[in-house]
Image 1 (tube, rainbow, N blue to C red):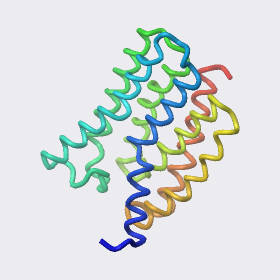
Image 2: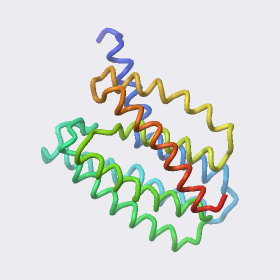
Image 3: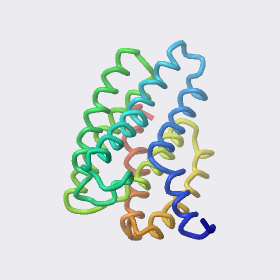
Image 4: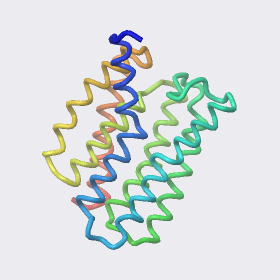
Length: 197
């Protein structure tokens, strides 16, 4: 297949996708921030199960049964069920994480993932916000809270992903912009409140 802009946009959309970006951020937070903690791998397993394993299995199952038309869940009307299940997954992950008595930031990740998924679900009833951009920018917000301003250079990926999603006609400019701005602002505000920073 000839190399073209559509191929580039598609690669970007898959590489900077929620199931890649979120676990990458969690690996950085846990291994660089709490790598010496005896339970660090357990923290990572709970976060990985909630952010990658459960969504991949859920979306694959829904695609196989015809509940969704594609893996990106392009159609807004098809997003309600998977989002609802992911709320439950993150609540369950939060309860599991609490049993490990982790640093407060880590329980906050799962708690606010559940809350933010509810917000996205409610928005989805009327409008199609970009989940790709929301997850990317909220992940940068998490890294900013853990590592400071050095993490902000990752925001350079936001316009790249915006271009990809718009080019693929998955979203319009406003949907990607709102997803990006809202994701970062909400995650930073939530974690500041949760951790008392």
